[in-house]
Length: 166
Length: 124
Image (cartoon, rainbow over all chains, first blue to last red; front, side):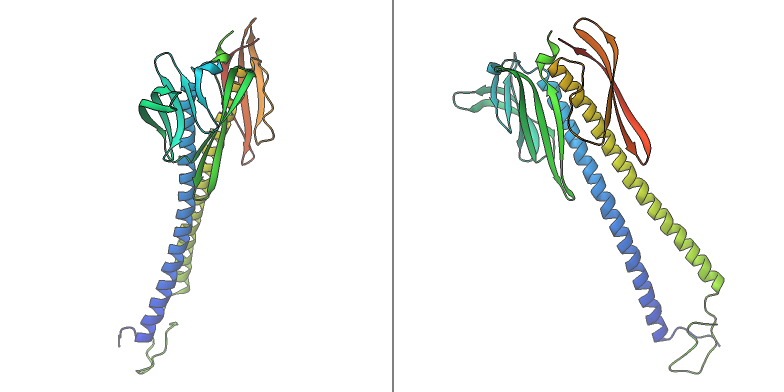
């Protein structure tokens, strides 16, 4: 004589299935969140490297003499190039390159063009490396991003034009 | 023998449950899947760590070269303790110019990895 499951049997089977599925989901969720955190970290790292690479191109052509630098603070740089002024700063959590003309008298850009260089960056710090009183040999940059699993800082150094002159 | 060989409401009825072999196969398949998932996880995490270390090493090598350019000497500056070992080969030397190869080495899972960058430096 064949029969179906009793209510008790069904409940026990159902409970076992639910426990098993929950356990599997928990393991998968843990793995997934961990992998996602690593992916996020790598992406942020790549953002920093891209940002550094963009700045490197510009700072290579930065003037040697301090007089050619319109602003050199801890978080922002502006220097003159033959055709325009170039600035680097963090604007709305994004590494931004500003081009145009910077008026030092009013400390503003009357006309400027903003270019996004890298996203999701939180802080940009500059340290200036002087070889003489009025000559900037290079800039040490610290790019910081804050991720879900902590913040990461990328330290690098960019030699200015002085490194290319004999 | 069934694991549910009782009935609260009806007469006793013999019902066949899972065989030990079936349970064994299920456990085996489950274990294989769990091991696959774990190894996939370890591989992914390891790959990410490796990529970050490589990027870090690359930037470290670039920073060393940039400092040499700023200082105008083909000797690496001591940037403090870190996980990388640095070495410099002086390929060709001229009066005010040197070709150098910067090698940055690090250990990844007991395997020695490295990045080599060759460049020219204007020296004093």
